[in-house]
Length: 343
Ligand code: TXA
Ligand code: MG
Image 1 (cartoon, rainbow, N blue to C red):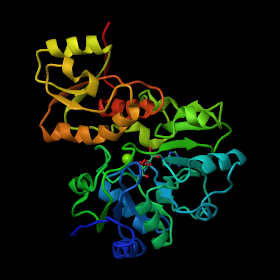
Image 2: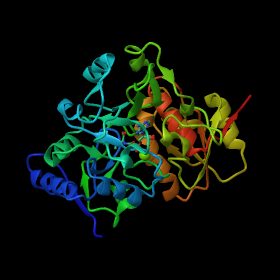
Image 3: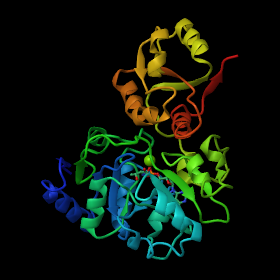
Image 4: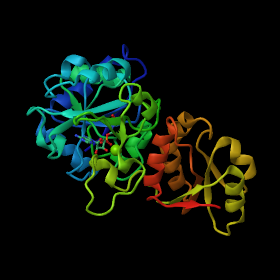
């Protein structure tokens, strides 16, 4: 299959490309498109056969459910059994935006999307190209991140093409994604709200509405074999470059001393302000005190490790407040949970 890639510079001027892409979705094909978090790999969410193609193109395990994307609140009611009272406030504040809400699903949701669960994850993205595509398609769009299963999520159309060229019909190129890590996933299907995946809508922000928010154990801990994952996606090794990534829990000074004196051929994923102290090749990942900048760079820099042929890379553990929790959650998976602590 030949994959067409169209650059969308302006929604007005490039409206014909959006229409073409919507035609592909309605015909049961796959279109990768930008969102404010990462690029998504979209199919008609109401077409089971189309949804199955997503799993094939990504090499994704069948037991990992997909997020359904909508472009208006009216599109929500056919998908979910009920919207809990407090969820209205959640949606009012953070939709459209980088937040996915898991609720009890209706029978409209194909089995392939929910992977056997009685819930569905719904997101209303704010990216104008994403919204225009969903609107023009006239159907909700199921979309995981547009990477091969296991590799870092794509934040540019170039990354999408690296993984998906020849596997899907079309890519809409909307430039670099604003946030750089996937949406926050919160489940409100039970009695208490559970944070399943941290993102740009932070735990602190969610606690303003759900003071008793539970942070799912899988956010920071490796699940043992046989343990049930609340969010199936969190149990896989993920976001992993070919290089062996190791997280080091230490102060900036101790970290610099550690990497500078290690005899190995290593790369350092370094925070901008800490680069001057490090005498190994550095790839920067934003500023230590600004987790948003780290999120924006992380996946791109994990891919860069492969481009430079790195075999091993160290990174100092990031902060875990605000969006730092999202960065640390992704890094733990890129490092297969390998963290060393310096005394
Ligand atoms: O930012 C994003 O969320 C991107 C863009 C494209 O919207 N999408 C994305 O999709 O990251 P994906 O498939 O890579 O991640 C979806 C996550 C997985 O961890 C999955 O297990 C979880 O959401 N998930 C989906 N449906 C669920 C459900 N019903 N219950 C619990 N977790 C669910
Ligand atoms: Mg993904």
